[in-house]
Length: 166
Image (cartoon, rainbow, N blue to C red):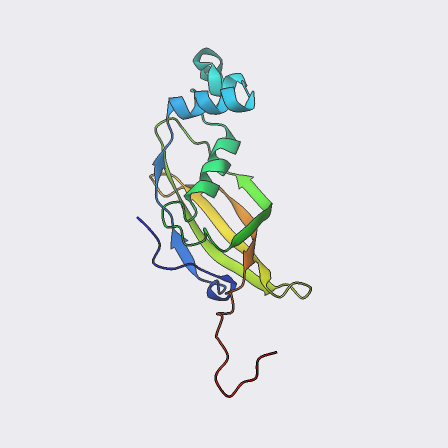
């Protein structure tokens, strides 16, 4: 699925919202994440250990859920592929419930604020209020993600006959 058009800074008005696609978190995802990051904490990698925890079984790494949240925002639309300049940070991110193997998560997100840069008016900073939800629509993670986004480019218009060229 492709985007119909790019979203620029001017298009990201506070309150504009989306529901991202879903993804089922598998044991293979957790094993790969543990291997990639070196985070082999037994809550994620040892069923025997995890049985003795309040969860009673292994759960996904919190940071794996955060990484999926980032990827599921506009993941399959491409709407921001040409306008995002940089991921600037995360504020007030909370891990409120575990993500279990087999959970299907999606992201609901909305523009919380949008401010044009005064020093570089061709861009701005946009805060997104993000909620990661499981298949029961329970919030498992959430917070504010901040992106630097380009303003809509000024279209090149050739001078008219009455305009003088420099």
